[in-house]
Length: 114
Picture 1 (cartoon, one colour):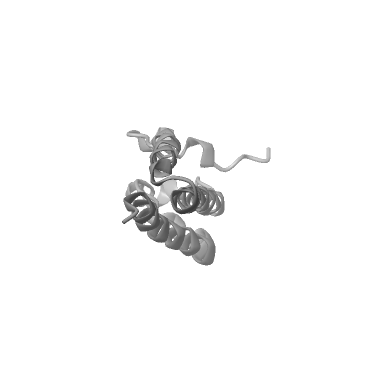
Picture 2 (tube, one colour):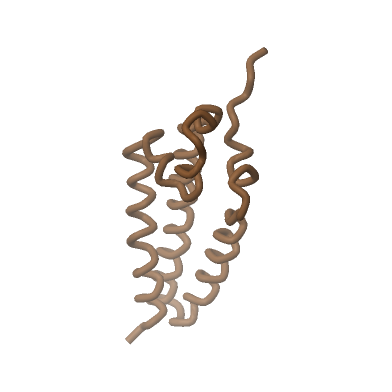
């Protein structure tokens, strides 16, 4: 039994589905992003919802690609290849964690064309 394969596959499936959800729903999916739905509606208008959805879609697809690569490497190379896959995923994931919603969404502010 290749536990590394199953661990990577279990993470791959929901993350890939989330990526598809962000791809299909586009800017409507911005409300699914943690913390964004807690921002007041007036302030949400200041953010580029399309950019948020596109960025989350790309992140989910990158994370799922890492897990898919980890699962395939577990089958063809070594069952221990899940460890580097999870370490890489964890590093990328933790880079996106912010406890302050203003800081988390600062890069998504709409630019003024003045």
